[in-house]
Length: 393
Image 1 (tube, one colour):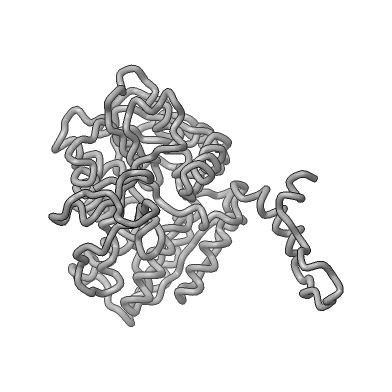
Image 2: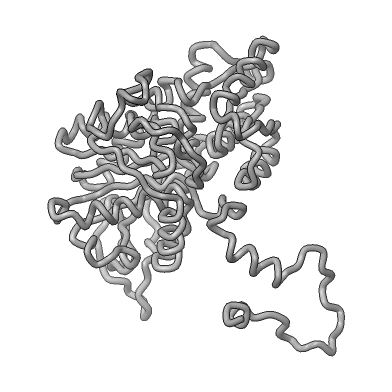
């Protein structure tokens, strides 16, 4: 079930145990050992991620509602995208489309899906080529994909998704053993969210979800989870988010933004409105989506920092943006007493090269200058740096 810091100690709640206060002198929020699943393969740990209730970071006006966060950074590859990478590959295997040791997996991505591909490819014995934009925030993704053994190709970011798509299709035409999962158009993407993510959310929230809020990357999670939640609660409002700078799904032209993972510059193939001209789109409800929301990059970054410092939960820009919108929804008069669920796709540690970390990066570079040799002078004082002194300066 969803849990929160400050609750009384749980002893296997949900596994037939009882909820009791901690017996130690100091209250603990660490759960006593409860029945655990048996040993399994690494890829079988994808999914069944925890859900938590936000507390200290929630503004006063928003506390009238309950905000629950699905921690998808707890997947083995570190993000929500592990689900779709694994499912698309295993469904292709079941169809006989790909073969380990023979097939090379190739796709373009803003990073997290690429890491999922690289992880699954390593575990199953495939070669993998991950294409991502040549921008500094891709640094961690580049490193991780290469560490898994995948090749990384960096494309011209000014050409956007259309340019990346052309490159991948050219590679497919020239290499008969290449296979393209096509995360932006593969129905196995939303299908895994309808089959797994949606039911997990419903169960963990105790069968009460009034709002589901998520950003549009491929659109697969919005489509799949939204479809499932509306099947069990037709009144559940599904809110799809985009950067304020790139509201493609309401007809605006895409502009640069810093919410990594959102808005690839094209309309999601999984959401109603795909194929329509921009002037035919609006912010009116359509398909599974009841509300088309938006959050500016600056708001996303500010909320990330707020959640990290007040909740002890380090999240990335897309998570910060979704939480910001959840705060706004929770403060609406009609949301009083409601349950709002937000998916947090990845951990904040994956964005060290993003402007989100700019201030701390600047400080760390002064504290630990690149190339500086360790101090070997024992006559120097014990303390050589204190971060609080840097902040004062």
